[in-house]
Figure 1 (cartoon, rainbow, N blue to C red):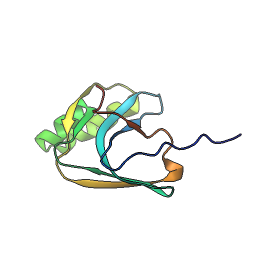
Figure 2 (cartoon, helix red, strand yellow):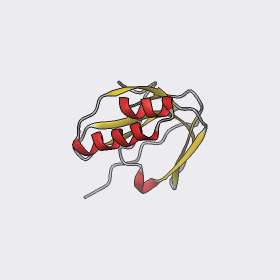
Figure 3 (tube, rainbow, N blue to C red):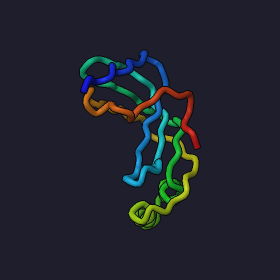
Length: 114
């Protein structure tokens, strides 16, 4: 089977990272800015305040600083029952994914769906 060509993103373009539960439901989405896209890696950054969509319990745990609520969020994920809610990144972060990992993890978009 022939592989499809990998989409290359321009530096500065917005992509959305989606974490997908084994059931196929979206667990989270986060808007990221492309720093570099090469044949070896896709390097992105998440600036503070970047739009995100997280499970509501997880977002509450982050807002309240209550780790027990975060545990509830992961319990909900295990059962496949959760509601998504808006969130935003607090700290800057950088992600680097190898070309092999890129599959459908990042797709061009102006903001997370949700």
